[in-house]
Length: 320
Image (cartoon, rainbow, N blue to C red; front, side, top):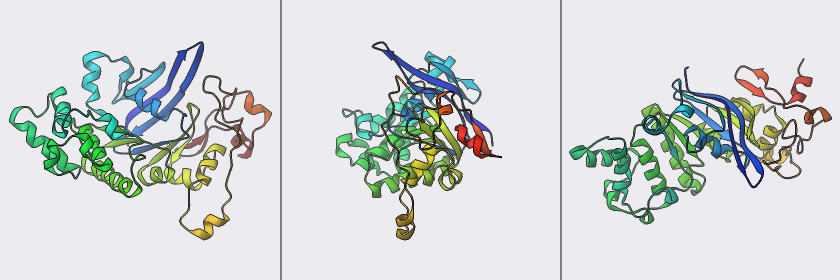
């Protein structure tokens, strides 16, 4: 399966007040066409910044973002705007991302206007067609964002992203602000749209249960770096990195007998300051199996199986 997106050694560093925050510090991964990559980790680990850097909403400090073979980091102006039609984002707070002064029809129509799609008589029918695609009634075309429920507003955000017929959509905590019942509806909608339109997703979330439901592959981030990556079943049933094990041990299991007998992995300490990260392995200050050597080198990726790797020197010691 061909890679639609390739990210190579991506870095995003912010400098100010005499300090440099390494929000994203050397990420490399790819996403195949029609697949979903789940990007998980604690708040502040760099997940959203990664998404913004892929879209060039935040310009990377270094690295390459190859979309269909074109490095987005080298584009500017008209060329970048033309390419952005193929890449869209759905934000966490739909109401904040929708202009409160514009009715829903104009919010969606604006995207069509910017990209020169569905002009004249075609415009209004296309807007209603898009609303129907996300399960919204046509009469909402005259409503304003504040008149919509959270679920409706998020469907409008999805509708606006779909208006320009993208190939890849970054879902940045796209359902975390919704009630649980509405979350399920929106997740099902996203999956249905992926199947119908052949979309590719990067699904950024801290909700590990939802990520397992929607993803094909999962990348686990910690303090600006990916520490483990694999197919979703490998990550959830056979996590290798100590940080991944801690995350997975916190995911509730619906069987009460299994849940009561499970052993939780509790992390000590707080997330280190990204402006002054620990030497060597960044997780070592909270890792239950850390040794002195962990402070001496940034651990390389250790391949555990096809498509499954983790960055931990203790894994190398334990593998024959």
